[in-house]
Length: 451
Image (cartoon, rainbow, N blue to C red; front, side, top):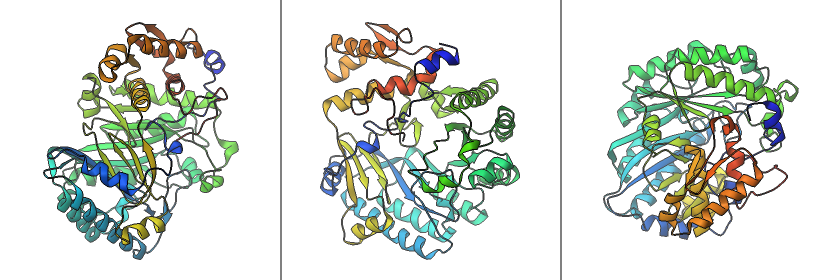
């Protein structure tokens, strides 16, 4: 299992597999879920409970070529201001429906580039959120920050609004790589932004870095990771760049002939991984690393690590409400996604209706398989007793599913009647193993949609 040849034989370098930030994954959402489901599910939230809130800001001053997120470029604040008014209207509608006493466990501003909002707009938006629900005692308010698009006024506004965690995208510090992906962001710019963030009392820092970029080598990723480590982030997401130019047209600007091979991608990942481990970061799931004192590490040790659309999380809330164009909400009953296009989303909200355009209602089997996949992604194991207790199913049924997965990955999985376990040397295959429990993605071809 430790050789590239064995991994290749099992299809690691050929398969395109979902990231499993949800189950089922977003391509399997359908139009049978609409605003009536969304409002019913909001009404079913228990009074006095904690929920999480995600706000999507889809605008950027410049569009990075590597990004496959749903964003749009603007040099003017006019469309941003119009969108902000729509977000505030959606927030007010939500506030009218939320049961009494609901508080925010987590609040996240994502994008796009939330920090392109001028300071006044930030204060306006934060006030609208506060009118909907207050923070819980142990809340976390995080914002995605572009070091090229932030200043003292905006950081002061965010800190005053309660931001206590910042998320900074790095990608790679090498200038040639930055040129090839349309993201110019020097180390000094990033360092100065992080120092300014901490200067405003925000001491929890997330950072994203990519492997699999054009012109990336082991030496270059080593240098970038070492520079990142010098900034002492609390959490790092080490994501693999997904080259999907047929989906994200801007990626056609990236020189595909300069991309590393699948085997080289694995070497890049392992190089970066060893550096984080050598610096005493805990390995969280398949692609995150965290300081020993960080909430993710604590949650992992306690068996409470979870997975959502932002990746790994220690968020205990059962409800995540997404606001803004294309945002996805997660309820115990299912998923609800807003209209992806900004115009369609804005039109629905202005008509006084929520913008839910599609989603998925959970079946009992969805809940079972979703938990099995989450357990694999978070803990590399599935415990039979947990599933029997939570889903009231026979242990023999669970073991039968274990054995079906083992047939797809002979001599890879460690299986007993009590649990399925992925040993460390096989964890590069985790997403593929998870797919063997995915009723929507089961395909011998290995060419399912990557999310």
